[in-house]
Image (cartoon, rainbow, N blue to C red; front, side, top):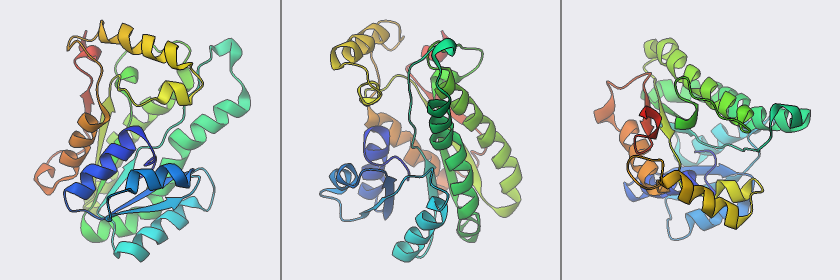
Length: 241
């Protein structure tokens, strides 16, 4: 699992471990990965930048060395930044696309043989904010990458089905992960954003990382084997308003 040091990734790693799975979490900061793993001896950590050209080989090799197999690959890591079209910086755009889109492509490619050997599952984490015909002003690059991830989910489902590999996606809505603060938003502004969004969400609140983690684990179960190519929105019904 990529992006395992915080938010949805950390919650998902712990949920898998609680269900008895051995989990490798990947992220750029070893300290946050170790915090995720604290108290969970089934969680292993690998500090790596998934955008590095050698990262896919390193990650897959580490998983195989630790477990001998790869049953589930969760492409979760993402970075974001807030800027209008007029303000976009070329290097920032490259960094977002590198982590959010290009890295998952080549990590999944590297894992194909291992996934095929066990009829495994790829879970791509996108965003309900980029579903359908919705717009996302000041976050267009992030939204563009997440929309592309949904397209990859559908395409890989068809391409990889003959190899026995399932590909599914989950599109979380507004979830209190702290991502806004990590992207540079002041804490007070982030809390105000969450409060404002809670008033717009039909369910009346924002989501919790553990709620998204539960769905990721369910989609990866053998009992979900007929789910393939689907992208599940978990957003309190915001995307259908």
